[in-house]
Amino acid sequence: MQCFSFIKTMMILFNMLIFLCGVALLAVGIWVSVDGPSFLKIFGPISSTAMQFVNVGYFLIAAGAVLFALGFLGCYGAQTENKCALMMFFFILLLIFIAEVAAAVVALVYTTMAEQLLTSVVVPTIKKEYGSQKDFTQVWNSTMDGLKCCGFNNYTDFEDSPYVKTTQVFPPYCCFDRVNRTFVEPCTHVEAQKHDVEGCFSQLLHDIRTNAVTVGGVAAGIGGLELAAMIVSMYLYCNLK
Image (cartoon, rainbow, N blue to C red; front, side, top):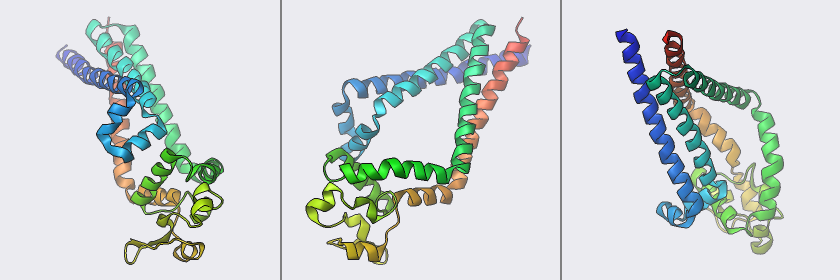
């Protein structure tokens, strides 16, 4: 009986934290969606353009809604000893866990396929938008400057783009001298070909693989918490009258 009471209390506290996180994410998501400019000023021009590009407001609302529902079901089910709420909590968490495992498998097995798919979408967009759309251009400039990469695959992604047509040169990030840690300008076709800076997708994969232990540890920790929450909810469900 004492064990049951302790687990019930921990379940309530744990889900109360999830509930509060969900409320916070919902509030921030609604704020970004309703009054985005004032919120984005906090993070400066680079972060604001990136946030506008991925439309982070809707993502925060969706994530907050899921956490809100999970936290409420967990707290309500444990506090009132409601079997229906506990079972719903278990199944929602199980679906999230299965989706995360499936995404990890797809990321590991179909990396090449994902690269081909992204190439078919991203490269034409770069050729069409880079240099003409301010937000899109700034997002790519920030990415290339941070990762020291050039385009999605390499400098050829910028050929026939509005930027190259207007300036007759490639972005300076495509002529990065790794020895002197400087950008060679003007970044002509000859210089870009000589420096052969790798694409951002390859650089991102390299960084992920370099930090695979950290990424794997975080993923394993999240998965462990989800499994523990499912086990606890099922334990309470089975021990309720």
